[in-house]
Image (tube, rainbow, N blue to C red; front, side):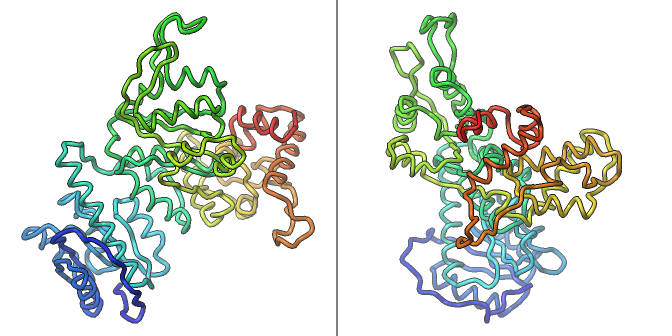
Length: 470
């Protein structure tokens, strides 16, 4: 499907530096669109080639490999996704930008997951096209520099394919993963408990130049300060009572790979200072050691807290915050992407029917309505545990309402969400009330309550303490 010229609006271009002699290949079955995009790219100083079919585009690779391909998705014979796949086979460094119309969001998601640099949804502004092409050229140059300096150039991993959802907020997440993964930048992932922050971190690692190195995850919120220090930095023999052997820390074990620090907002000021040294000097010192060790590790951190507010009240170091906050990725809660719930249900249903050798082919409409309208304080993790439990417990081929936890069948009444409503409550108040209600229904059984909420028992215990419930 071609981009109609009437859909385009011009915007004043800003100053920029383009990739010298960069070659752009534009593929679209609409001649007017080709002419328009050619003019735009030539004014930017690029060498431009155009073609009306994907097969003809591939034929041009024999003569000259383009730096960037701008391709419509909807084309006869071979669509833009097929062209993307062939392009990645023939020239992994070439960056592909897909053009898609309204109503094609799921196709665009598929393209991003398959390795497209970006996609542009119609209608779009001319400056948007210019900006995306510039970034694609810059990214191509970065990959070429990595190859010239003998860094391993690796194909995209499949970690991103485990992340489910076609909502606009999740597409923004996919695009940011694609852009930041090949870099060495520190990433800070912000999101509520259960949104899948570790899954995002693994996807970044799987699509990075470090993917052959280790990926090590550390939950900073579940360990005491001394134990966390020993786990992260290691210790020398005799450093403290019980240290009978030398122990390598997790940061040292993650050398040439990625270390994921979950709940970074919970670490002590002492450990904040030591972590800052890791980021600044790329070295660690084991507990009880006299000398430091150099480490080559990429840090991805995550938190469900507002680190900026913690900085303002003196509970988090400002210099560490800015070191961690090079690239920020906001992971939306399930309430912010309700349209993804059916997709997630299908994914988990397939996963757990296979795992448990059961024949559960779908969800009854009444059960689906309950799942869709539930508040989901435990987010995707709670939804996953709910579907797993339903698959295990149901005697039917469909998940029925009575197969769902009591919290879903009789959820707490939510207040009017208008800011002016007198019953408006904060998210913390709603979460506290919901946890208390589920805990009471389970007669104080924390293990069972954590299962129903879709969170780890230690997370539940921490929340009970925070909310004064224990």
